[in-house]
Image 1: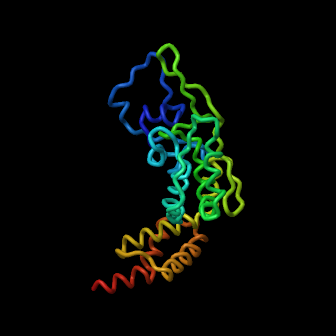
Image 2: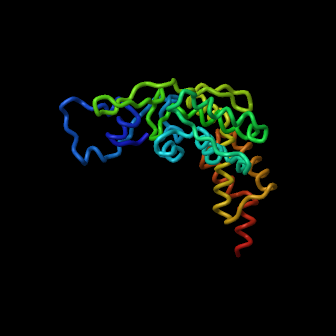
Image 3: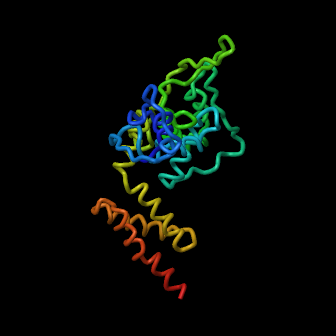
Length: 248
């Protein structure tokens, strides 16, 4: 993992970057990226715990579990859900009210047309709820109050991150989600392969070609899905070679 001193402590709370009392950090040191080793299978590390996607799926003030779940389906699993029905209004979680985020979003599950997609979306989004709008880890939602002209932040309701995926896998938080992806490498590998071939051929893959990609990825599982081997397999496939021949 690469980070600088400010982000390493302020966002990721990495012990390597904990400020030392009285120590001064130069501007050059502050902006220099440093490689840091972090424990595997922890809450940090990998795309799912980076600040960038967490900020992109928040509204600047609150987190948006639905947006985060859709982002994972669209950018990690390659299975974007369809657009919501026009007759269903958007629900905006209000974490300052008495109800929890989960209770607010439970309305999605009462409508049959919504529940089909939200069974896939919501567990992924809630698994990322431990990250606040800028990607800091949290255990409680914040509650703001004014005292002597100052804004005080207290711990509010506990963040709920558990859920059950459509295949029955129980998720406690982002660590279980990352573990699920590790145990199902063909999910991301298939999506990545389709994106690479779409870029290489300049067109979207059709149903037959997606089946070919699935077969190629399955064959590479025996080789631990090494990226180099996967690339060679894709370049050697009839999808790419056929396009290459047609350009001459």
